[in-house]
Image 1: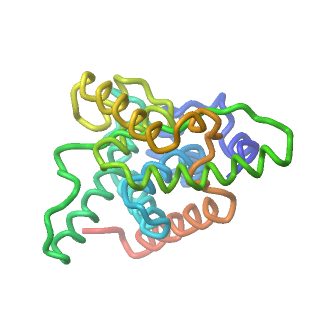
Image 2: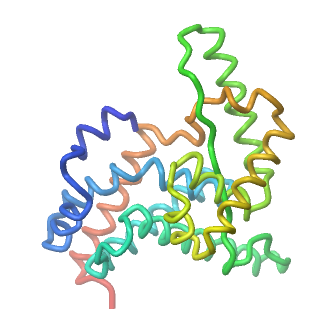
Length: 235
């Protein structure tokens, strides 16, 4: 989904609390605005946690359904993105635990401990050669991010890619702010060791979640919501 699509779907003047109030009042179109506003960032978080595009998309859909069912509990004590991120992480870690049980191995991720991720900022150069080089570097960085230990990777994504503050990241992952700082610092060092000086040239476009993907998640979630409401909802 492009930035222009986000703007058309969820004007910046419509704040998150206003959207939440509309959803609670039964306005399903407002929930579509909510999804389109946060789709890209939440997908990246799921993708960074699960290492798999399809699993990340499924987890995002389940998290949105959970959000829709419990939206009335949101009181605005934290940012809506933080609240949604927790739901996404809960779903991701539940999937990791189920996979661990299936494989009967020790999980890489402790559900009580969360990970740190960050993504790079770079200059938008017009040269086709530079654009191609950066596309290759982006692909390399995605692979290197997948290789990071989970506890570092998630913090890195939240801080560097999603540009959450230290406080927001700590709230989202339920860890101390000092832990956020140390994991973020360690994640960047690990990446720099792998990518050397080129890391600073990468565009912030990892795990792209463009039009068709965005539309599919929105359509699937809205269809399931409609099905639940048509069938009387969940017990």
